[in-house]
Each structure stands twice: as C-alpha cells, then as structure tokens.
Image (cartoon, rainbow, N blue to C red; front, top):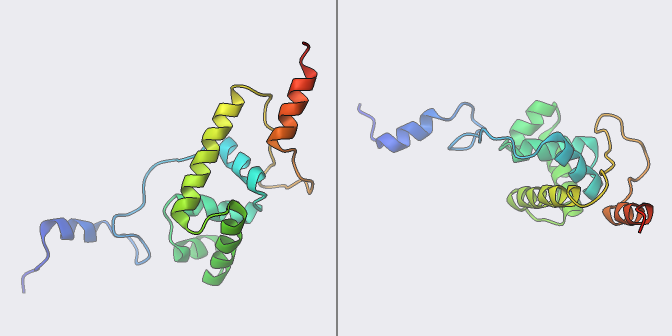
Length: 146
C-alpha cells in the first residue's frame, strides 16, 4: 500500500522525535540569558522550580515533557503553571512567553539608565524579598551628587 500523505505532511511527521513533541518540533533559539531569567524570577516572585518550568515552556516543551524532564507528575506541572500564570497575570503559555520577553526588554532599557539590578541565585534563595525596581531607582538617584 502506498502512502497517501503529501510530501509536506510526510516531512512534518519525520520531524516528530517523541509522542509529546509538537508537530513542527521545538525552536532552536535561546530567548533570554541567565541575567534576564533572574530578573523575571525576582520581578514576579517565582520560585526556583517555577522558573525551571517557565524556561522549559519557553523552549517549547509540553507539560508531559516537562514532567518527565523534572521527574514530577503531570499534575504538578499544571499546578506550577497555574501559580506562574497567577503571578505573571496571564492566562496561557503564549502570553506568558510574551510577558517574559517584554520584561527582559524592560531590564535592558533600565540597565542603560540605572544602577545594576540585584539578583537572586536560583539555586540558593535568600529568603528575603529583593528590592523593587522603583526602590533601586530611588537609591541610585539619592546617591548621585547633584
């Protein structure tokens, strides 16, 4: 029996490496660097584990792939995503990705006009809340001679 798929459809099927992969595969791009991710984590008060989930979502992984990669249950990934969506005030993964990209751009703009941004190490949280961007701006303005 001959295949009834069009050549374009066959090439799409060949790109699938595992059952959880999307039809076209994952993008091969790094969206944000570690400094930007730490900024996102601090800005939205995201836990280190939630940050791992956000990074994997932004790399194109499905919930099932994330659960397997982090060695947790599928429901745990969904719980993390609900928490992340609430903290970032979004309703879906695409909007979350766009929000992260927007805030990373904000970091770049602020880095050109303010003091360095204090970051939290994702491996060892300090337990205290980092200063807000507004607080850092006030500190920077009060320390510069006029």
